[in-house]
Length: 298
Image (cartoon, rainbow, N blue to C red; front, side, top):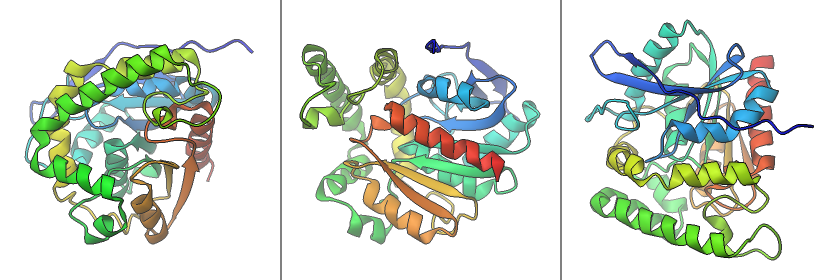
């Protein structure tokens, strides 16, 4: 079968009712079943391009927004993440779309839960991938690892230091993986960062392209950290929409995602190989989009 090429479609934008700009890209099939994609914290909408093939094969129109402060979307400080649904309702009305499914990774997983909780009239199901932990919740702190505790304390108290640290870590790992192909052989902790072993070369190149866009990531990351460490504005234990949590087996956010899958009324938990960024593995992408497709068949 001929490989479907990945794409970088034009960025579209609209002016919201309050005068801010919302921007997005679209992947998959233009007239397919509509699905919203939410990128990770400090990332931007091109991240959804990793799933272009899966969206095409399952008749999905994948709409990936830039959140406030990312890409060409205007910042909007002071709002809880739950209020992002106001922007998305305007977008869906603009596109003349009724029901949607949604998915997102990391902070995008947090947004997926927020939208599923606040737009129950329009969301048929959601897939949070390695979702951010609500660190203000005592249960989340109890079940999380010491590494996660350190990371979330840094997000809360020294967020200004994290963009530079993240950039140095990504640059270093990119150099290491460029010199040492880990696509086969024994597991190495280096496999937990960047594209996982077994990912197609063009998918890996796109993932690195997104992760190494430091100027794009830096301007959005501090806003995202405020969202993640402040009250989210919705009850993440009682989301009535079907939810399927997907987490890397080594991801530090998996333990609390397992709690959320247990507590929510219609939720399931799934593991995939490796760590936080391994949602790009072809097996993970296939399973995630098979799940998304089933929401429309229910």
